[in-house]
Length: 172
Image (cartoon, rainbow, N blue to C red):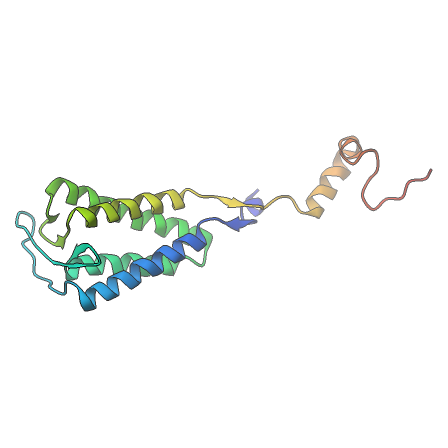
């Protein structure tokens, strides 16, 4: 049973790697060209950043994008790693989006955010959580499994194959 789950193409690995590259690239460019400030007004203050490509970011926001992208790229080569890290990073972005939505200006006085930043975090979170739920596909039974099943139940195999077994010659 476990062997059947290990077969097939992962629907999560490719998209997780692409999203990871986008997040990592945005985070690095935002750190270079956007908000580089790491000042905070922890918990009850308001922290502002600079706008980079429409999103308000500071150094901590940039690190969120960089860390999320790096984790996704780290997990992307394996199906279970892609799904697990997609869920973890997706939940982190969902938490940041929810807190930013409630607070309005930032995330706990640490991560700078505007409405677009909150929207992007929410979209990234939704996509990553959806990707974490995707299965493998195309991992059907191989020829040996069919042969073993037909050997145990010859009548079922004869009906499926139109009365003839594969590889057998009719004696007509």
